Amino acid sequence: MKMVLKTTMKTKTTIKDVAELAGVSFKTVSRVTNNEGSVRKETLQKVNDAILQLNYQPNNAARNLAGSKSYSLGYVYDNPNAYYVLDMQNGILAECRERGYELVIHPCSANNKNIIDELATMIKRSQLAGLIISPPLSEMPEVLDALDDMNIPFIRIISASEVSEESSPCVYINDRDAAFDITEHLIEEGHTKIAFLRGDESHRSSHERKIGYLNALRKHSLPIIDDYQIDGSYTFEFGVKGAKQLMSLAEPPTGIFSCNDEIAAGALFAVRLQGLNVPEDIAIAGFEDSPFSRQTWPMLTTAAQPTNTIARKAAASLIQHLVHLRSPKTNSDSIPHLHFRPQLVKRESTLSTSGK
Image (cartoon, rainbow, N blue to C red; front, side, top):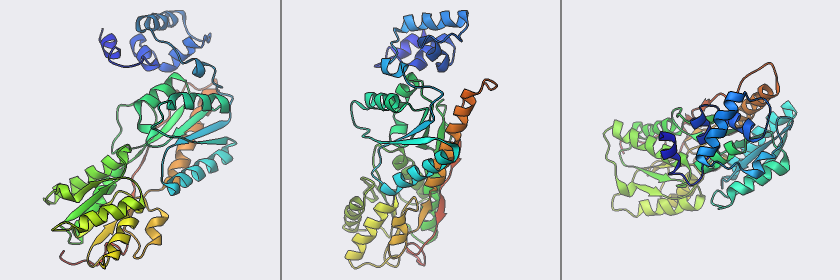
């Protein structure tokens, strides 16, 4: 009864709903809907009863997807940061070449109302064995449900400080604690008025990094000032605009923590145009350790996020899972979770301050 009440609130019944009601894995439901002969009679009856009760209708495009004999992976992304995307592509590609896999790269728009159909068509056309998805697509429940319906193995990269109860395999990036480290570094350098320039609303990393910033302020009993927190996007242009807005305040901050290096580079450009010195007049930090952090003067304090390594590990984990699925001697249905914490990198843009 609980299951029925839960699913009636959703716009579409998913394969996970059927699996939960029948008390089986979603892969077992997929075997039933695809008429595979490896399901016991009792289990088959339970799944069919659940399908009838929930009026579940499998995605027709997904039912014909190529299966375990494909040796192609897909990387699906929607991210304006060219350095991030390039590192992801290179990392996945390196692992694919080493393991004898092809890589299909598919940029798309997370805001596309037909994104589910687009992914289904791409997966079928490219005959993919599995998918690697990065934010914000990897953080969209409707995309994850659709991929489960398609019975396509996938691993997703998300920003999170701890493992959630979500069943889908993840690479967790602990942005929250890394943002805490950056903010605390600014505090240790003598700053008590620290601003935060936040990235895109649709990316969980924006929220996680802000939480880390706020946690550090609270730990050191520093005031949390609304005017010091500006929402924007992961762009150089927003960094320029945000820094100008902060510098126009009656009491401007003495330190700026930017949600990524591109924002920080824009902020640095803006304050230098106003004749301010960094870090003597204002300290600026970024996040991710992208080339932006090393192409500015002074170079930016940041948090080193090993995107290339993250990509390789994600691809390796997914490929290992596919190997298990192909082997009759194994019974592994899971992909292990992976964890990364970006590391603080102290550079000239925040060092050598005194008593701010």
